[in-house]
Amino acid sequence: MRTEAHTGGRVLVVDDDAAIRRSLQRGLRLEGFSVSLADGGRAALAAVRDGAPDVVVLDISMPDLSGIEVCRTLREEDDDDVPVLMLSALDEAADRVAGLQAGADDYLVKPFALQELVLRLRALLRRRPPAAGGRVRAGGLVVDPATREARLDGELLALTRREFELLEAFARNAGLVLTRDQLLDRVWGYDFDVRTDAVDTFVSYLRRKTEAGGRPRILHTVRGVGFVLRDDGDGRDGRDDRGGPA
Image (cartoon, rainbow, N blue to C red):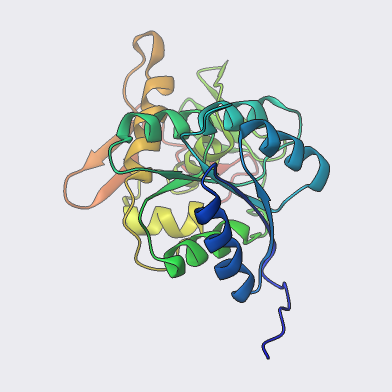
């Protein structure tokens, strides 16, 4: 008889479909996770506040409170940066985008293989050591990991946790082209092949915020390769406040 070690972390599965909840609970427990369940949005918020899960698997479409509303509420609460993986139906593309905008880290489209969910959860649960160095300057952009603040031309950018992490990765590698796979590895922790347009989606969010008010583009697409942060107006790209390479 197999013993459940529960070494994978505490997962809260939120779905109004009882069959899906039972299936994910059974499968994730066999993979070593400790699993709790919620059958709707309000129950999910109560479970997060009471049980402090390490990661949330959150269905988008629920009758009482949508996954988007749940995620937005979590992100508005102080010090609540629990990773959120959205589940969506194939025809919910607009809702998936709204979920990412609300602060979700990524999404999976139903139906999906359990092993892909497991890989993504393990990646989201990894805790990487903070990058060395202080604030990073890249032209008019200043990113401060200590305060989790980013300013462009002196103006504070209102960023979600994932947007900040992505912008920090660009700032620390300013002038260098980063591929989507590199960004999925460095920012999401996905060191395996995964089908997701999360990088492109979050780059588009960052562009809206960094280009607001008519500011010139600093995040550029290198067709067929990836993206690069480049500000031609300043030669200090990618250097921290102490003058060394970031």
